[in-house]
Amino acid sequence: MSDALQQDLTELALDARVGQLIRKSPLSCLPATSLKQAFEAMDAAKAGSMLVCDASGAVQGILTRYDLISRVILPQLPLSIPIQQVMSSEVITIDADRGALEAMLMRADLRG
Image 1 (tube, helix red, strand yellow):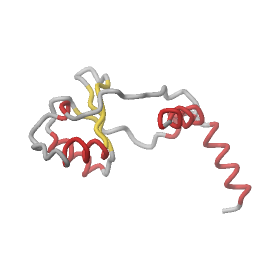
Image 2 (image 1 turned 180 degrees about the vertical axis):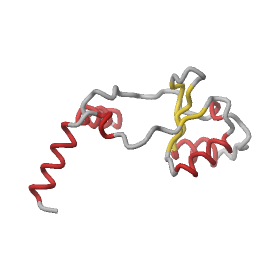
Image 3 (image 1 turned 90 degrees about the horizontal axis):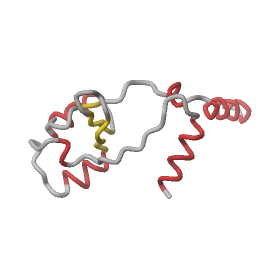
Image 4 (image 1 turned 90 degrees about the vertical axis):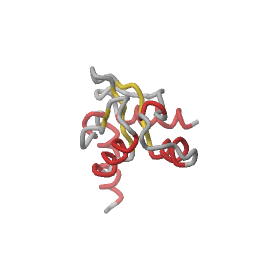
């Protein structure tokens, strides 16, 4: 790919809205979903994370691959426990109409 084309694609992506960059709906489950059910769904969807939402669809938390390792595998928790016991409850979000560049800067800020 030429440098000029790469530059054009980068500028186009940075001008895009977050909602334009989303390729598929996020995977989600209820807080009472067992870890086994959540992991099976993540595996089937080839997803690296699972949103945890209440019955109205409001996000309550998220379980990521990092959470899986540090909060489930290493402590050797049973897969029968509900996902709400190990999810990260602080979920940072951004509106779909915000710019991709803003989202990237926000993520960089959070990483320190």
